[in-house]
Image 1 (cartoon, rainbow, N blue to C red):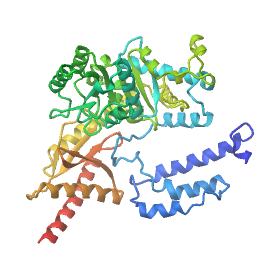
Image 2 (image 1 turned 120 degrees about the horizontal axis):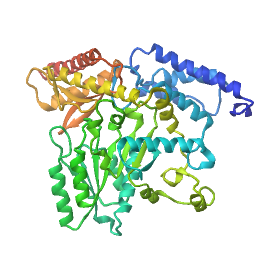
Image 3 (image 1 turned 180 degrees about the horizontal axis):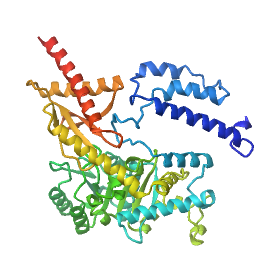
Image 4 (image 1 turned 90 degrees about the vertical axis):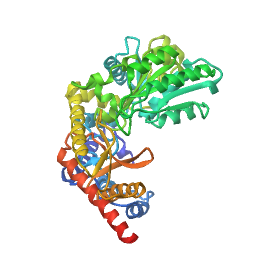
Length: 480
């Protein structure tokens, strides 16, 4: 079995196996004609359950043949222009090259003696991102597994900076459109059920700062502590950007930690034309960025940035077997001193390779393209009598629903839209997301593929209308 270990003796075998794997994937990418095959759980599960994991195939080619049947053939392919579902982006080739390198070398980014150059590359990228945000010379940060972990770490720092031994008094303020990880983080941090104060949004689904001011005043009046305000720069459902300058002013006035969840909107940091949409983010105490959304990076690639590097001490623990305190005194850079994780992949290499090959303007230009596409899609939806569209996009998300010409009850319209989404997914012709807006069922295009066109959007809208009309027609027949 030593023949399967990657080392100097097996380097040629590694080259052959990986090359064959790349060829299989490249073939799938080149021949995929729709984002999904439409396979169901009931169809695929028995095939996978029947595989005896105690009986190895012993051969990489045979394992790849099997993998094609159980995964590659039926995978949901985000690179397809009619994948319009969740916040999943097609990935750029330099990042995939970085992924191949980091997987093989397998550096662990917890301590200097496991990563050396990797540590410095990650730190350089953190400095670069902090500079793009405008956090100042004292800024720092660390790569994470994703936005949820980044938000958790930011709120951990905010809790500790609140300096209270009465955690039940702490409050976190965020909009009703913010990510659910804010509530999850509050629970994980041991805060009370009432810790998260959900604020209403305006017609553009942005936090209402008048409501925020009123709640902060009430918090102070009742003896609670305004621990943090979480502003969102790119909400999951609408791509809305909260009014960051006004929120920053209120955070300073009430002594609250300002966290900006820019997991989605961070692509604007590289945009040649839209960076101004993030004005005010430079006042944040911490920022979440997900490069694996709007920087076109493979999962996972995220980071949490802080204005004051000293606040990262709240995540620091020393162990004699890993990062003894003397290392800090000797100025040996250990990334575990800043991270909630210990063993951690060198995900920063993917972004490094991307910037070194494409440059920031190249990445930002791609994000600009999908934002422009969303604007064109909004124009199409606003002029289509079959659809009701919620808000004009700031980023690249469109939320809408099919509305039949004939007068029909809202519950039936809800079911028609839900049916249309399911039927479209089952056909494999396109993938769209769904959500609820004010209690009603809506559909969602998340546009992150520059290869998607207005014609693709129009074609998918026709498919959705066809499925919805079929559902309504069948229900009218049954009802008569």
